[in-house]
Every structure is written in structure tokens, then in C-alpha cells.
Image (cartoon, rainbow, N blue to C red; front, side, top):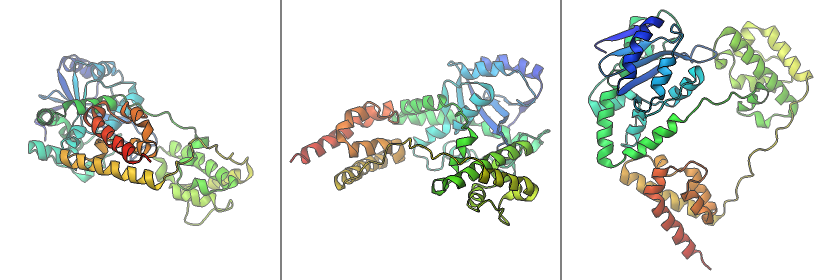
Length: 381
């Protein structure tokens, strides 16, 4: 548990603290969100530590976070986060903030061969520190106020040891020559942005199994998908709590009839409106058949399959030698393209479709090129 932290829920307090944080050479950060309980997930608490003191910043109460945005974007201040992809996306969506000079301790741990990169396991392995992970606290509704002392203690604990962990991980990365590898990965994470929300008219295609529906059933599913979203927004709960995707799919295939026991909160709280939505789907315009946006699948010959096996054996051997997951050695889509069309190897070695990292090309590009050259020699008639 942290020795000390300060909960900041007034603008004047934040304005008092921010200038000192802006001068810190590095900061540890984390966020807590309310996605388990709200229709629109958002950041509800921001934990910040300069290594001496921890601050719990309440963005629901502090309206002007301009200085936080400057700190996050300052390339002279190192920002340490653990498993930061979602933090980066929500900083962008909720506040329009970007994060520069990122050190993701979860990513660093992966590059040191850690199989379980959750914060508790990584802290215990590299720093000998055990932090309590109370299941009840993990399920906290961070959007409710006031926050309990137990919740604040829990939140502060996630950043209290993070800068010590950075030192240990960076030391080991330097010994293995992998600092630049992690730096590039962190730069890619920093560039993440929250994706543009898809219109409801087409978002229903996220429901697994929609492709097997006929045009009328698609129209019903589209109507139910929008109806569920409206109710989730009105009730301020996650959409999956209103009705599951499986429920929507089953109702779409029920010829416009409500099905007993199917529909979740839609059926139990607003059965009449659910019936109206089914009717609109049955009587309204059919959903147009979506145009194919993806190219047809490639033809895999026995030769190309053997090439892919060869490439994966190579990648597996490198993975074992370095003690890293195979996914970090070379991206599978690139290997598949090389196996199908070896003549594209130069393009893949130059970055492919954007998946291949600079450090991967520098470390493994020559080996990969030699392997493909061996095929070209052996396959000459």
C-alpha cells in the first residue's frame, strides 16, 4: 500500500500540483474506467506518481486538464504505464490528449520473456514486490462518488512501484540489447487513437453469424441492434447487459415473433417496444447485401503451404533462442504473403503492409532473405 497519496477533486488543488509534475523527469500513470457499468465508457480516475508522491486525479470533478495534456505530450518527460493501449486510446477520445515518450512496462516484460505480463506478476518477478489484487476492487464502479478509501488505496498501488519497475526492466533490456526494440513498440502504442465509431446501420454486422441471415433477417437484426443501443444509452448500461448478441441473432431469425426467454433486459423491461422493433424490421426496407470489401482468399498450393511451415519453423527457432513469443519475431500475415509469393520478399523486408517493425527487419531480415533465397534455388526446374 502506498505510503502517501493525495486525492485531487478540486480545480485549485490540481492547478497547485500540476506545475511541479510538469518539471518531473518521469511519471508513472494509470487510469480507471467504468466500462463494466456505463453505456459510454470513460476515464474516471487518473493515477500519477513522480516516485515520491502519488496523486489521484478525479477528471469527473476537475474540469480543466489542459496542463495534464501538456505533460502527457511533453517528450522530455518519460511516462511509464503498464499495458497502456487502452489508456492511450481513452486519453485521446475523452480529452484529445496524446502521450509521448512512453515506456510500457508490460511490453518491456514481454520482450524479456515474461509469460504472464499482468502488473502484479511482473512486479513480483522483477522487483520482489507483491501488490494485493482484490477481486472486489477490480470490479469497482469507478464512476460512482464518493470513492471508498479502499478503492483509492487500490488505485494508488498500481503506480506506487512503477518507476522502480522501469529501472529494473530497462537495465535488463540494456543487457540483452533490446532497448531499441521496446522503444519502437512504445512509439507505435503512443500513435494509437480511439477508432471512429461505426454507424449503427452497418455496426450490426459485428454480431457473429449475421452473414448467414437472409436480407429480411438482416433488416430485423439491424433494427434490433439500433433499438438495443438506444435503450443502453437511456439506461446508461453497457449494451451487452441489455441483450446479448446471441439474443439479437435468435430474434432476427424468429420471423418477427418474440421468443420466450430471449431478449434479456429488452424482453423483461420493455417487451412491447421490443415487439415494435421486431415489426419495424419485418416491415421496413430490407438491408442491402453488403459489397465484398476484401479480396478473395488466396489459393494455397502444397508448395506455398510447405514454405509457410518452413518460415514458421525458422520463427519458432528464433523465438526459442531469444526467449520471446513468436508473435514478436515476425508477423504472421507477412510470412503468409512471402509463402504465397516469394517474389514480394523485398517489399516485405521493407515493411510489408506496415506490420513489420524496423527492429525486426534489422535483426532478422537477412536470415529471412537467405531462407527465401534457398527456396528460389531449390525450386528452379
